[in-house]
Amino acid sequence: MSDFSTKPASDAKDSDQSSSSDEGGSSRHRPQSFWSRAARILRPQQGSRLREDIADALMTDPAAADAFSPDERAMLHNILRFREVRVADVMVPRADIEAVDQTITIGELMILFEESGRSRMPVYAETLDDPRGMVHIRDLLSYIAKQARNKRRSGTKPAAGAPAIEVSPENIQKAPRSAKPNFDLGRVDLQKTLAETGIIRQILFVPPSMLASDLLRRMQVNRTQMALVIDEYGGTDGLASHEDIVEMVIGDIDDEHDDEEVMFKRVSEDVFVADARVELEDIAEAIGPDFDISEQIDEVDTLGGLIFSALGRIPVRGEVVQALPDFEFHILDADPRRIKRVRITRKRQAIRRRVKADGDGPPIGDGNDDRPAESTAN
Image (cartoon, rainbow, N blue to C red; front, side, top):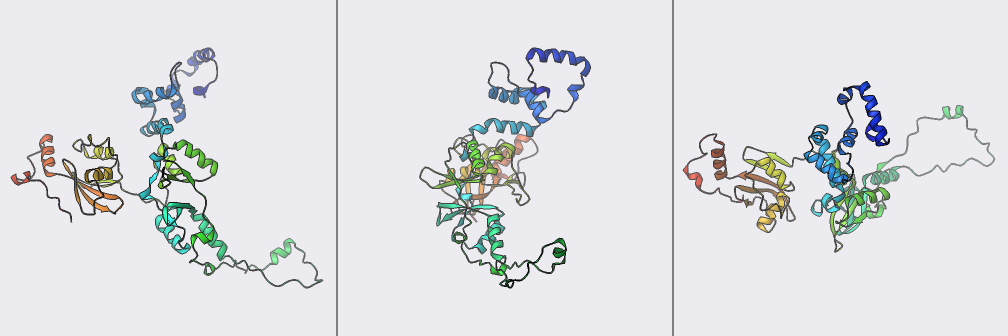
């Protein structure tokens, strides 16, 4: 390919001049692959740093905007910043980790795998701060199959001095075909604990400050796809997987078992429902400029963080929180550890100001709308 030619510059120049008359302008309209366009746009100039040139080209060069689709540009941006991404940026927080106690029975473990849709889960003893490894669903199925398979052998032995049976294709064809594999799930003791099965695998332990690229290499060397993130005190801080790291570059990967989870939904023009893990910047972009987070964005990143910062505690279900001047945050779902789902409602005064600014019509409501909206917990 010409984009990756190793010929000297002078030879390449002569070659280009000699071939220009033959090719004409057709090469300008020839479709190019993603990597061919990347090499052409991102080829560094002498005396410049490649990384800065790539970033500047993607941001300011019109040719780069035309050469790459939005998805391709996003992927290139992710590749550029990948070396700065740390494990803390990609890990699943402790509150969201689905793990199992080593004393769980294999019957209960089968149900948990079925309900969660996971293929592997961390294993702990008593608390998540005492991890023991991980369990893979394939190891569980293999264990159950071995227990259910008949391991008994026939006690009949050939008589002493009996002639040996000659094995031939004819004899094999005449063998009875009615025999069925002796496989009985009733032999499996579903009350046996996970620790007793011996199928717990080792797991990687890494600090949150570790580079995600370094963790990816460790996973490749150790042939594992899961690591527990341990804080400076030895407690479990989060969980990082091979898929989480790859998604930092290419975006979300959903398989056939992943349920589509709606993180943000517009119920009406002034009512929204969001997962508490949604980034504040994404919410502000979806709602509009009146969702002003300029004072909070340096302190918190997510909707849940905004509400927790405003209250100084985890709210209870049904509580209404005043975290921003023009909006109310109704807690739809929460537990003692975290906020889960929130309904965001634009206040009446803000609706009236927005309608006046848009010039779409008279203010909404009557004179009594000047009073603040009621915010009582259900």
